[in-house]
Length: 116
Image 1 (cartoon, rainbow, N blue to C red):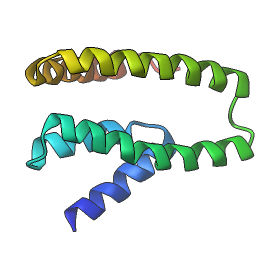
Image 2: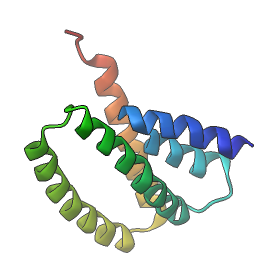
Image 3: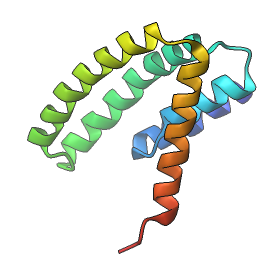
């Protein structure tokens, strides 16, 4: 039941574009017995349908700059392949630290960012 609730919340957040996948990774790695590598795979498999549905709706509502989306998709795909190759060569503890540092950095930026 908790897994269902987490899926609903992270799906809604993914649809809003505010990091549902990151929260899913945190839940999987902190509150379940799932290994980091398995959590990464589950997060990717979860991400594909949720983001696909969101992108379709956003494109239909003309909220997406298609050229920017195409550029981001191409560079993101290349970076994802590179990240996977690097991740496969790192120990799980190192990947965990990198992920934690990224979360701290992004959270700090959001807290310190001046609002317009």
